[in-house]
Image 1 (tube, one colour):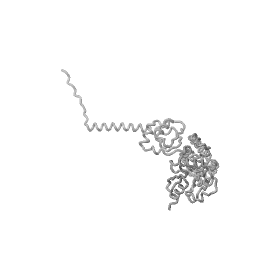
Image 2: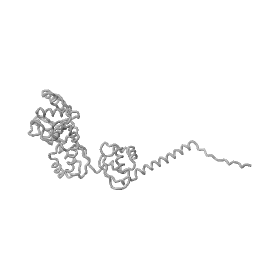
Image 3: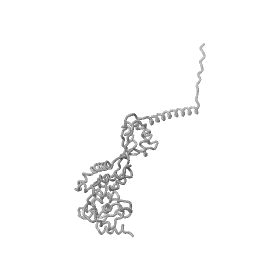
Image 4: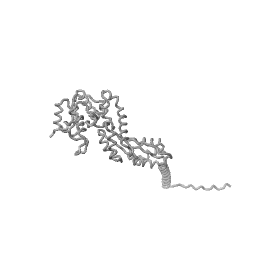
Length: 340
């Protein structure tokens, strides 16, 4: 007789148990992934000497991750992008020059980028004169004021207009001579970008720098630059005084009561000051630049816009008003500057 078949027990899971089991497996999977991510975040990229990385303003997280990956400072650019983005660290990364050892973990690299480099960020503004450059540098750099001032003023003598306004990342112990060399070098690079267009104006390099320095101080809105440049060039060709307030401001120098190098309101008496920089008295360009212009001012000098105007002024709200004749200009003065 055939032996009786053994009954096989089949264990059936309830729906609730199935859900619970799936949840437990999910937790284990998530935990495993989290563990891997944590391991990668805390694992050094490698070994060796420090490597220099420059993070520039406006760079995206992807660009930064690519740089770090190419330098061998992080193992996974994709993980770097994901972590920085999810943690809201993207806006906290500071531009600068960094020297980072490969022995740091990705998490440590991110912390270094968040807290800044050992460099100092200097932002010199368009239209500043060299004394303003000095005042700003003394506030930002841990230097001995007296010796740095003496060296800076000596190194910048005759270089007004040639100290390019821009953002620089410099070593904390930079000397005044090194800083001036950096400003001059950047000027030459920027000027080269517009030199061909400027050549068409048939002005010497120094004349162009002088003209751009005046445009920088006179224009209050971007769109005004080319029109003001055209007016100034027209006055030069006609042999009439430029009559520019900014050159008088430069002549008058520092105003103790106002705490500024640029006097806010120029009086009729001010326009009579005896100085070769007083363009109300003398015809032609002043003997040197009156400020350090930016690239836009040079572009305006190179691409001045011809117009029917010969005069302009800004009202108390900063709005510009043009005039074709002296009579119209005087009317603008009465309307916008002598309002009761």
